[in-house]
Amino acid sequence: MDQSMATGMTDLLAEDLDGRGPIARPSLHDAIVTRVRDMIIEGELPPGSRIHEGNLGSKLGVSRTPLREALKFLASEGLVELSPGKGAVVRQFTAKDVHDSLVVLGNLEGLAGRLACEHASDDEIRDVRELHDRMIEMYQRRDRLPYFKLNQNIHSAILRLSKNEALAYVHGILQARLRRIRYIGNEGPEKWAGAVADHEEMISALEARDAERLSKVLTAHMEKTWERVRNSL
Image (tube, rainbow, N blue to C red; front, side, top):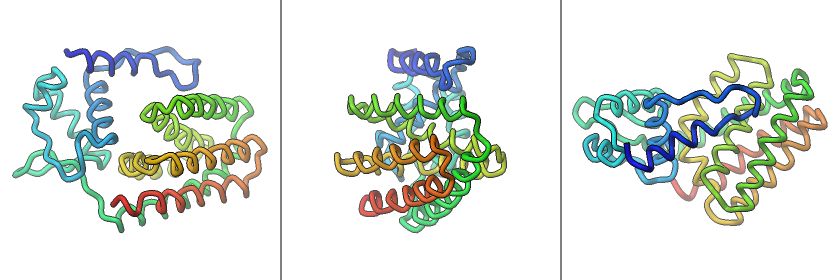
């Protein structure tokens, strides 16, 4: 296994989002999925490009079998398309795909925000604040990928605090598909600062248990995301 893959596995070992649970040893499958997903998010594997299993496997220091299993998993997330003739291709979304998905995400998150203010415990809200503070640290360091992962974890955490499994499940599917799109929404200092400002307001509304305000902020955040990414599609 090469150094970059080992680093990816170390990152997974260190990631314990709530700081309380046992740190699980990741499987090779999880490490490959994480690494290839990151390559897609950062554009190293650009939309519409064919994934050459031999070349990618050599780069990651893994054989084709676990790589193929990882690609199947990423296909289930909607990041990769598998074709008998072409193999694995990084999914390329149309502008309409992205806009439609962001509209749905905004409404799902708006509902989740209301429910989270009603159902979340004080400890759970403090956990989200901790994620937010870590995200701000990454922003101040301009460490973009760790910032983005924490950003996405905050959105997922708010969905979990809604205590509505069906809502969180549907949201998770759409959020996974749009990882690359959401990532490019932070390109440029002005767009990135705008996203951070939205998150500052989110955490403030959540801590105040202001359901209406949090709902509006979350829905508007997705509308702003569309404005940030539309010219890049």
